[in-house]
Length: 296
Ligand SMILES: Nc1nc(=O)c2c([nH]1)NC[C@@H]1CN(c3ccc(C(=O)N[C@@H](CCC(=O)O)C(=O)O)cc3)C=[N+]21
Ligand SMILES: [Mg+2]
Image 1: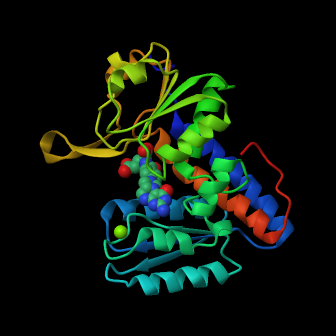
Image 2: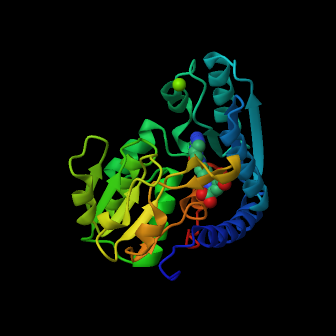
């Protein structure tokens, strides 16, 4: 019973290879490499792991990586000044400020300061508005990666019932917009939803992004449903160690689902691959080089 497992890690590797080809073509035309700036404030260990992974993938794709590591007591004014400098830097096509930020910094103010056309995270309100109104812009990496996996597996999504569990600005809301644009009938569930199992049971597509370890169980699912698990939860394991689990109880869900992403190796690797994709798109726009869509 492995044919229903969606191998996000393999899909992401293929996507990164296509992006690397796109980068080489861009360099030949523009005479420079696409550039991604990543800003990390503080020493959050998980953030350090992610930022290192992004740096490695950026270099491997042939792009330039500009890393800015700032101390945890960096002022909001200093961070905003760095963002302004990156907005003005023609070598920087994409800017990512790693979240979460330290408590004394207003995340919304920092996101709003990023040039929307360098906002490869797709978090700026202008890009959220573009997504909601069907205007070309940057789409947040995690939900776009989820959509790519769903379309690869299911093809046309139109008319399917989709439930998105979670309503965050970075996953739940943009995921709902993307599925709506694919003509799904979309339900957004959250912590106040009544009878969540009944809502999930009506869904052909379930996207779980709640941040609660193994909450969604197999007996909630419609048999054959496609399940996308966005959760990344570290829970205690035997021997004082920890292990990574999703928001879906994988063993019980995999026995019922028609397709399911594992954690790790599902959505996570797609987030980084889509970040590179968005940066490549940004580079084409910023350099005024037409983008030849190579199945990205
Ligand atoms: N401005 C901003 N943009 C982000 O996109 C962003 C962020 N802040 N803050 C944190 C979250 C989280 N995130 C992940 C990226 C890769 C994996 C990933 O590659 N996960 C692997 C394994 C990871 C592991 O072993 O810890 C997997 O699921 O297979 C997970 C999570 C990006 N985020
Ligand atoms: Mg804050």
